[in-house]
Length: 319
Image (cartoon, rainbow, N blue to C red):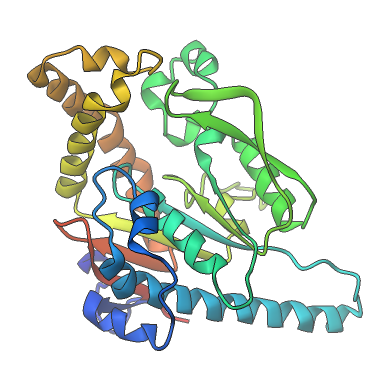
């Protein structure tokens, strides 16, 4: 992450090795079991209890401090405005990063750890997949090969959802996505009802969009975040992980006749690998370079992974 630190003096981040970071766990208890970790981790992600101890317990402790500070500020604002009837808004954590880098595992592990704090907060998790435009619309607008790029999302729906959550509205609905059919499920929603903490995960959640020239207020997704995390790794490693995952899915989920990618399970290994390489080069690598990686420095915390898919370095934004 050298490019994040042009000089030690001027970098907005503090950097820690994984071993240094693990010391900040202090007395934070381990509340997950190995069986639970097996259930939470994604395909090809080797996260285990040792990684939770090394990285995620310290992160849980840090987030606890941020949530407590947010609650204190809320009470102070109540007193300032003399408005005791104001409803406390959820603390929103954004998680960004490339495909195949491990965002989903991080989001699910954090959800379980945070929900088991002594205060027993209500923690919900939403991904941006459900806010993708339906395939029918993407095809109509020649965007199927841009799926996952910023223009493939219903940005208005994303902003309305986060605005509703941050406004402490009741029963805010988010659309549901099927990875089997590779499409949004028509008429299906999940309802989020005033959580204490919302984890919002997606590849482009830190994307700022275009700034208006006239000073008009244009909200970005990250405007609603209280804390943002970016999962990082070298481009070559992500490429490797993406290809490995594709080939594993070819032997598992793609074999389902209802899968959008079922046709790939019928190909030879060499042909399937060529497809994976093409998808990486023509879609996912372009999205990483053009849209995802440029948002990395906007995060509050960056988890940098090494070749074994485990975190090697942590960058924390200075206060």
